[in-house]
Image 1 (tube, rainbow, N blue to C red):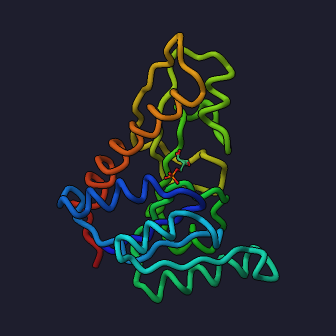
Image 2: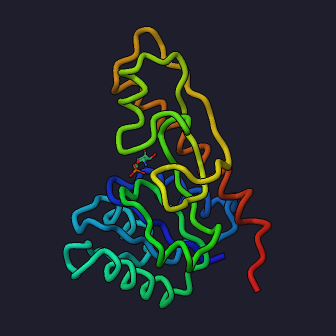
Length: 191
Ligand code: GRF
């Protein structure tokens, strides 16, 4: 299976996925990293792992649709079969959804449908919930609304700061995402 990672930031999930690929846990090839920000740290991590990387932003194009068409052309050039969103902070549009039906997954740092959007960890922390967690889901046209594939709970401790909670959420992400991708991708056959 040929997968691309889409990201906007640090890329710690990308790194966790690469380690799982190297260990043979995920039987897939990460053929491309794409970032919608030219200074995203994930691009440095891609270099470290020797994975081809590209970056451009919607601002480089006349419209969001034109941006997505360019991204789709790039993905087709690399013969990408699955899209794995790992901190890609953008709504996925029709061009990509139509090209990869049920083959786009995302990770969200809260227990969806609670706390969708950009600040899942902070929103859960400020709401004072006792339990939050991580969700992996298929991507649809909404914001964190697609069918849920897997979730893992993370308890909020009485003495947690936002930072300590963030750290445990990220640890949970780095474990759950490779496990779920292995289940999804290892058995998948594409003609
Ligand atoms: C993760 O918390 C992910 O759930 C969210 O964005 C963050 C990305 O982190 N969507 P990283 O770039 O993988 O380090």
